[in-house]
Image (cartoon, rainbow, N blue to C red):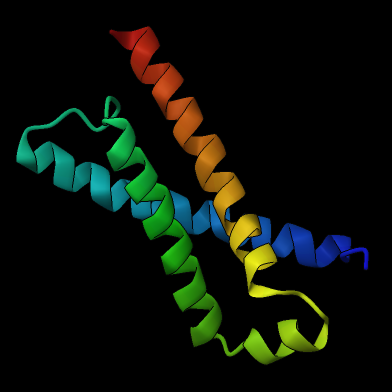
Length: 102
C-alpha cells in the first residue's frame, strides 16, 4: 500500500523537530561534561539516533496516534524508519561538519 504524502511529511517533520530537540539537550550535556558535541564516537551517534526515535514514539503515544496509524495500515517499523531518517541525515551532516572543522 502506498503511503499518503501528508502523513509522510508530518512524521518526517516530527522526527526532525524532535531530533533537533534531543540533539540540543544532549549537546548541552556533552559540553557540560567537557566533550566535543560535534565529534562523538560512532557508538554515541547511534545512541543519539535511537534516543531520538524513542522520543518520537513517546510523542506518538502521547498524542494517542497508534490506533490511527494501525487503522491506516502503517506498521510501527515503518513509523520508526520515518523517525530515524531525519536523525540519521542530521547526524551524518554533523559528523561531516565536525570533520571539516577539525
